[in-house]
Length: 167
Image 1: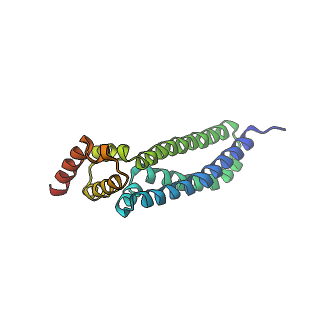
Image 2 (image 1 turned 60 degrees about the vertical axis):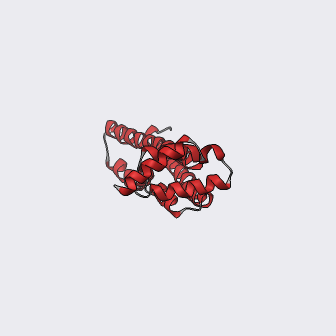
Image 3 (image 1 turned 135 degrees about the vertical axis):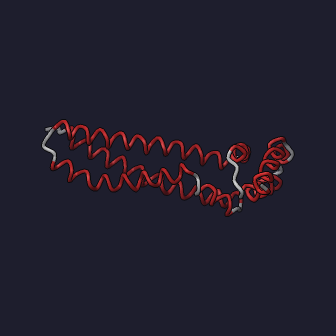
């Protein structure tokens, strides 16, 4: 006989395992590619310091604990309505992880594109951005990306980075 709650929990665990098994290696590979592309440890560490990266990691850690504890919780619940709420919360939490993963992959795509990266970094200024700026400009000059190297973005980013660095 079909048991909605048991099958829902099995599906949630399966989806979680798939997300963990696919996304985590891809994220680590992305960090490695960023390091190789820009040849900049500062830029790689900047990506690892992103809030969305930390949020995603902690959501996975917490969910791993929840998935381990949930079967015991579900076995002690005799109220069908309570089982429904526990399964619903597990599904909602899984949706939050998936949405965070989408945002994280969007952030990774910003780091892969030099122009998007410069505009993103100019909106979020840190003291180490001047070092990142020089690494990006070195890559742009090697790639002969004249538009980026001599463009308006370079000037505004350089000025804002120097302001943060000096002050």
